[in-house]
Amino acid sequence: MMPFQRLEVWHDAHAFALAVNAAADTWPPREMFVLTAQVRRAAISIPNNMSEGVAKKGLKEFRRFLDISLGSFSELTYLLLFARDRGYLTQEKWQELDDQRARLGRRLWALYKGVARKAEAP
Image (cartoon, rainbow, N blue to C red; front, side, top):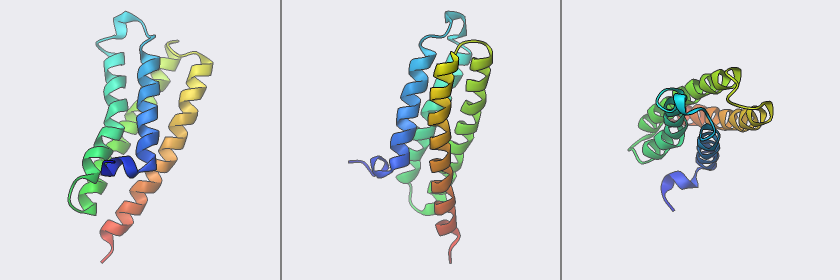
């Protein structure tokens, strides 16, 4: 098992990226090169940066990559709201993704705070 696969939050992020990509598969073809592509990149960026960061030397580097994951998480949060408001997500699908998003956000933020605290410790 790779080091990133030992992180439970990475598994949450991976599952969320898969769910978001599956939802984006149903969006109008006209969005393929704009919204759909941006949503896919943001979703994949979250677990991808965790995977890369955990392989770096030191907690400060890992924290930097978690910071990037959090940025992608925030970007994706808005993009999913936009998709919902454009009618690309049903209320049921939106709620399912938002529940998954909220859980991931809590866990990702907790990991970031823990790593940041340890990285700054003398």
